[in-house]
Image (tube, rainbow, N blue to C red; front, side, top):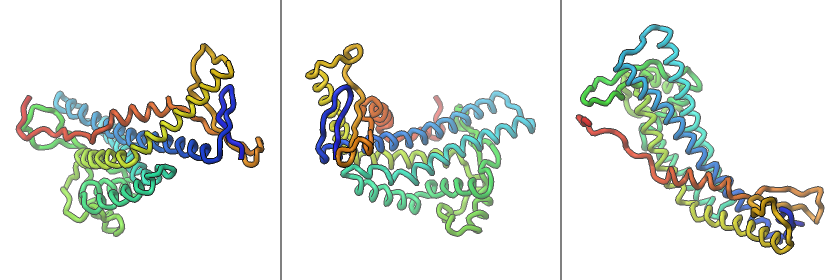
Length: 301
C-alpha cells in the first residue's frame, strides 16, 4: 500500500499511520454530525416555540379569527411541529451509529441505545412525542386546533398552545398495539403539544450532553492527530522552500492511499481543522442541557 500526505509536497506514510489518520478524520466527521443533528433539533424547537410566543402576544393584542387566517395558522403550526418531530426522530434513530471508528465507539453505542430504550419506557412525554410523530406520519397532521391555557395568574402572554385530542391518539394506539408506548396513562382531552415538545427536547438535551462526555477524549485525540499531520506538511513545505500563497500555512491537506503502490486505486480524503472548529463552537454553546424556563406559579415581573 502507498499512502501519503500531500499539499505542495508529499510525505510517505506507513499503513498504521494512514489508518490512524483515517480513523481520526472519521471520528471528527462523526462528531460534527453528532453536534449538527442536535443543533437541528434545537433550531426547529426554537422556531416552533417562538411561533407560539408570537401568537400568544397577538391573541392578547387582538387577533384575526376568520376562517382563512385560522387555516393558515394551523398549517404553519403543523409545518413547524413536523420539522421538529422529524429532527427528533432523525436524532434518536441515527445517533447510535456515530463514532464507529472511535475507541469508545462500542461503549457509546451501548450506552446511548440503552438510554433511549429506558426513556421510551420510563418517560411518559418522551414516549408520547414518538406516538405523535407516528400519528403524524400514518394518520394526519397532529395539530387539530390552537387554544389558550385557562390560567391567567401572570402578566406573561405565553398562553396559546397547539393541541391534538387525546381521543385521537388513543384511537390510533388502539389500532396499532406496537405504537402504544407513551399511552400507558390517560391523556388530557386536549394534549398540549407545546408543553410536550418542550419536555421531549429538554430530555433529549440531557441525553446529548451525557453522550458527548463518553467520546470527548476520543475527539480531542483525533483532532490532535490531524493537527500533527498538518504540522508535518507545513514543516516539509518549509524545508523544501516551497512558497505558499501569501505565505500562509497549509490548512487543508490530502490523505491518499492506494493498494500496492498503484495510483489508479488511490482514494483521497481531505484533512482540515477549520470545519471541526464549527463542531467545537456548537459543543461549547450547547455544553449544558437546556434550562427549565418555566416560571413559578403566580410570578409577576
